Length: 608
Ligand code: G6P
Image (tube, rainbow, N blue to C red; front, side, top):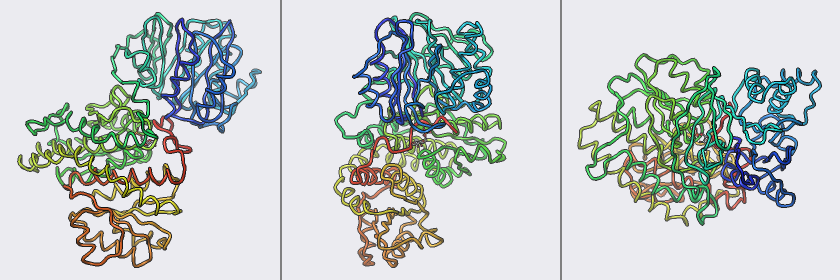
């Protein structure tokens, strides 16, 4: 959510800043801008809309400079416009910011009274004028930064250029991520490791409250107490190719088709495939965990919803799940000896991160499942397990979700093994199914024509309903979320048995109803709900397997069937998530929406 980048060195930076923003565009695409210091002045280019608009502007009217900053915006304060695009500048400084300055209104009033003139509706501009004010009082740039940081409240990652200081970027972080990269005779700053990937893999992650002076040759970091600190250099190997579409039309499609590999990599990082035994990087004492609270946002929340069934049914641990933004203010009493598990692709979603801090303060054992190594949650949790999905660029999450489910399945088996709720042969049977997942995923992804055909039925709809029971109830919710996110069709995911308590009133002959019904202990009940849809004239489309098809055909239920392979109860929700992803993708294609950058959304949500 808002991406920032900075370069200081001896070579021109402007085009490279724009190239960096291309790798950050998933974080926001309302507007973009760059600023450099050039011949004693601040040069700036900003454009409303996608990054290409900035590129076009720059091509017509390039700027020079060997030090500069860039920003891609997801609007919070102020509409998407050129005036509200970052960098924001005064005659002394240029600033890019990710986060929210919560006390900006009071600061703005104070600064207006002092004669500062504001050019935007953003909260960020308060930082610009505070810095300017402190500089004009005779403070050094670093002293002006310290004073500014003492005045501002909220969450931020900031990168600041100061006119006249041609070899230094000032940076600070509180709440929003920021990483500093060491190059050869050049230094870099960015929101994540991916933006820096083509330039350097030697990274220093700022801790909460840190600020730094970054020049081409040196990096001086200070903590919130103004003490000089050393943050270790980490080598992060991310291929810059991850930020390309690799021949696919969209990142989302590429990421969907990567799932045989990403699930394989994830499963094989947790299971010894030749011995068919668990081989986890963490040793969690599941026997002494009285209750498990799982917390996340968005698609990651639906992973917790699947895992609740698994942990309760298989490992017999009571589980509560919550949306992070609700958990934070619910004041839920957490039990002594409880564990709290947090799931996040980015590892930075602010609500989830804050919920983790709260759980720590409540003496819960904290466990993170994240896709981004060295992210804030990865570093804060007592135990952290990585999904091996690789960088996910498409705003609608796909491969991160199935990798999260793979990790959760392994953790659940670990818990069941340690608690003795499964025999060793049952554990092995489950492991074999997890090891076979990549093949099954591959097979399901090959049936594109089936999903394209269903997409044609979805395209004209204004509303759609997704129904499932058990572990496929969360998949119904995830399917509905995917459709909403990228095709803008209103969709609800419902527990199939709950349909009669409300959504059934919506069903008419324009309403597609997607029913997920693998052959499991819930199937017969779910197929009764399918009948109820048909009885009311709904467009019934059932994703089921060979045994489900037999049942439907025997009962002469006139539903469209999309046949899935027979699945094991543990892996069924992972497999049924796949056609939901492709269905929303093909529906969005038919509607002509922007699949990878759907309106109003962004990834890595670092505002509350
Ligand atoms: C945003 C993204 C979703 C994602 C959610 C949670 O809403 O668009 O795809 O599921 O954030 O993100 P996280 O990084 O915490 O999994």
